[in-house]
Image 1: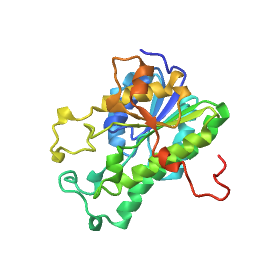
Image 2 (image 1 turned 60 degrees about the vertical axis):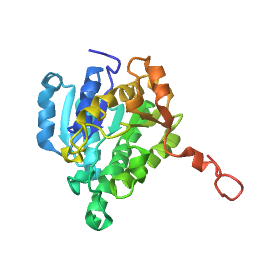
Image 3 (image 1 turned 90 degrees about the vertical axis):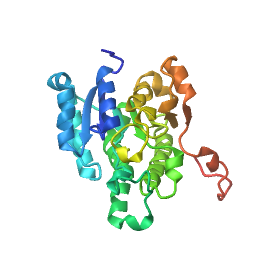
Image 4 (image 1 turned 180 degrees about the horizontal axis):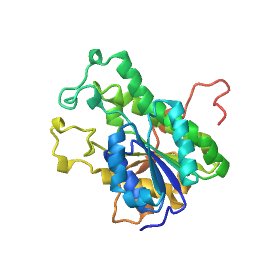
Length: 284
């Protein structure tokens, strides 16, 4: 077993989904203890059964958690700290996909009249507020110990801006912007914030078979593991405020070189250089 993250405790949201399962496996394999959070209790049970040795050794706990409810996020963080002995890593991966609205949404894109206000609110609460809730619940402990890694899973800029791909695209764009703001807020205080994206459609249940893609040509969920594990390591601690495209990570290269090859700033920093502001520029 790789022991690079031995002694570290990680929370993964959306842990029972396609990407989440791989992240749990990767973090456990690197020696971390993991709290796996998901709203689907049955799939959490399946995940625990997949890692029965880690669960039996007290290295994996699973908790049904609706990240759309702040009190449940607080409880999950408290449980992770109590059961696993601390918290060092937060991976905000949980999200609703467009299949919640209609299973054939990739071949017949969704129009605004198909989206109810309740659906819009649920997407925004899960896909954006859920990551804020988890960060808010975890941040005091991370800052006080001056060691923390926050990784937010957003999406491609194409998806964020695509017509008829609401509410998923705008909610993920909000998460991208929030990530940039948090990276700036926590910089120099021991807590890094970065974004990792697959880089295109990933071969997970969030992209239904009805999409018509050649599944072998899609990005495997395992592609998300190398950049996220590196960001959670000591070496990754020198970087904050970046986005990493997992599909462009060269697994044959040294991790630092692989990171350099798929790294860019979070969001749209070039658009923020010349604000119209009293006195010239706002204080940092």
